[in-house]
Length: 206
Image 1 (tube, rainbow, N blue to C red):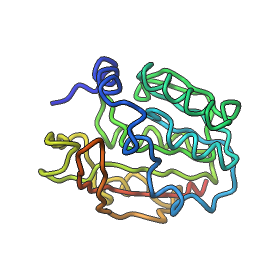
Image 2: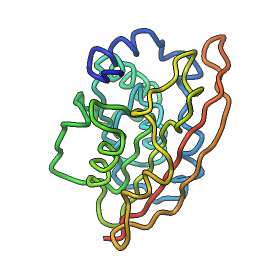
Image 3: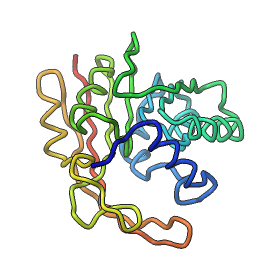
């Protein structure tokens, strides 16, 4: 079982150069799922090296990017500066499973984020940080024994199904607008990998 603690993530981002195009690109689901939203405030929970946070800032969002890894956040800050959006993003070094902000956001986004709590517990916590009228977008790893970056499969506790995530977002408080699994190929370095992603987007009604 993985311990998704600070040491794990510092090692992860030390080993994966942010200049790698496969790791640099924001998720392809962003434009499809939230490209039409009016810009507001956004939380990128588990922001890594900032691909999604910068994508949002370039489109007018005021973003808070939170990650446990100082290595990742340093790379994210460089990316934001290079894109000319450093003034639109606040970077916070914190454990998203234990961080308790005293505010909410009009958009909460998390993509491939793992913490030392159950995956569904993490998504439930992040849902509580969406403002009424706001949007939650989750991109997660789909359950599959063969799935993983490289030859290492993601453990079961680091995956979730669309139905599992949607079950957390119940009416009348929530309206689930998208829930699906998508397969895609990704090239990282010299390795081409096939990923199965889970995407869930929901609107917080009140």
